[in-house]
Image 1 (cartoon, rainbow, N blue to C red):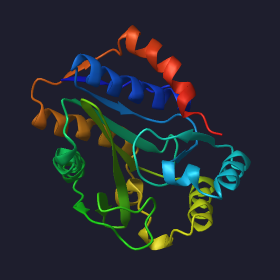
Image 2: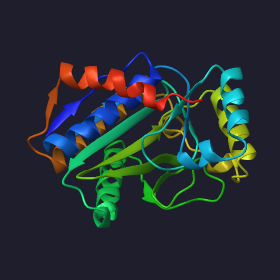
Image 3: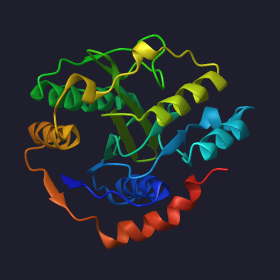
Image 4: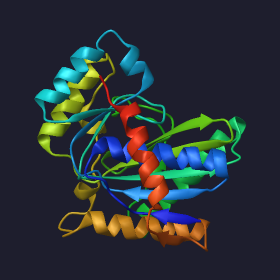
Length: 246
């Protein structure tokens, strides 16, 4: 299994790479993993959010906060992310819809295993008032640390996770305002950050990234870190336009 760790300077291109890897899995049967750190503030909107009556207001909120709006590849509701987050994606070829729970469980096990390596107990389940609420949420001692989502196409699936390491006040406020606009309950005590449960750690991002790679190797012992193929990157450049919104 190939692992790509490239982070793009354009948030739209991050989604474009994910889309290109999903497309390659469907067309060529090539599975892969991607681990990346968003470099700029982003408001990622799902299909329900974009089709809703408040979608233009959501985009205006994001622009005011200096965040790029992207049309997310996977399902789920609105989420904010930036350089204080870590994202994990998995393109699985020959995927079946009825296996979605297995994919979710494997991705969740990787994240919970990585947290355990850092001395943090994680658990699965939705907490009232969490960001981007859903059953496949990873909870930590101080609130939700990660959310999972999927996209199924003919012949392949994309499963991804967003992990919050630390969220600056401006991005946290944007997330709260977005949830309120969407009438999604919000509670401050349900919002977790890895940095809060690793006090004094000089680089929690690097520690988590290393722990996730170790957890991935437990699932895929032949995991190989590779450079993203040029053909995939070129395709991602073309696909990124599909994720621009509005």
